[in-house]
Length: 94
Image 1 (cartoon, rainbow, N blue to C red):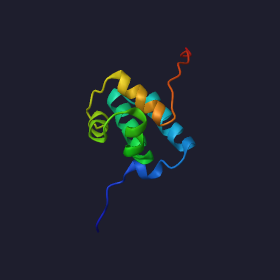
Image 2: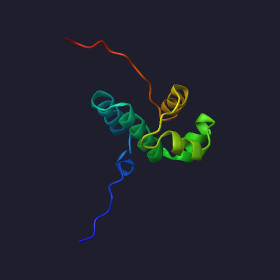
Image 3: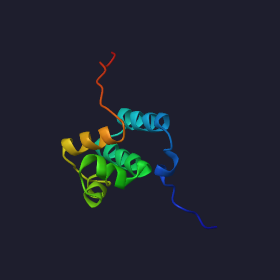
């Protein structure tokens, strides 16, 4: 039996699913998981579109958003804006 690798980006097809996915990763993941998730979202939207909106090249986006990457905070903020996201801080409850 032949299996294929699941590509999460194929399932991120609307803003609600994207927001739920990223919020779940932000809540439960570490910094590497978050960067990888942002990369999945950027891929689902289209790296060319994200590159155009951020002013970054496609190769640098792929590199910055790959597993194990450590991009600058400014890069993450540019990509978040391009994918239609934002960071909000809510107080933790005891």
